[in-house]
Length: 184
Image (tube, rainbow, N blue to C red; front, side, top):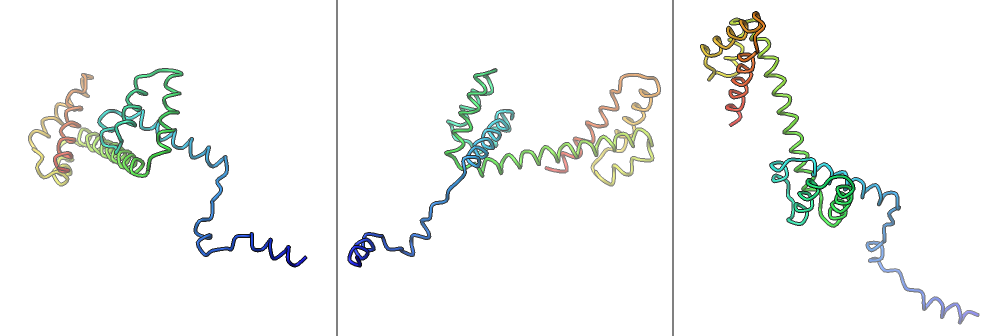
């Protein structure tokens, strides 16, 4: 009897210290599906971007061609192309793509925030008139005081006579140019 047990023990592979490192990690089916769905969502996000934004992402030629094609397709073909893009993303390192997308979104959010601030400044200029000009000059020292005052007067006249807000829009454009000039 002991001989059989000894023979059996000889057949059992010995445990190496390398076996711990090679341990297989089991992933549930649900987790695989969630990951695949997340990649499809990432693909959909890229398909919704414009050409200039796509140019800023680190995409290989095949993936870029699939995205460009998907942007042209409608209905059922588009859904199937989105699945293909998700499948293509499974075999790629998506971390650089996600990082670039996050940068694009953040830049967009910063621009929206800047536009809201400029709109509030423009409204304040039109309401307060020349009293608010020093605020703009503090923010943007290169601003032309005379041009700004003329635009404010014209915007106030347009508002009083219910004319189209041409100068009102010009104030915003001027403030935006000043803000963009500061960034560069």
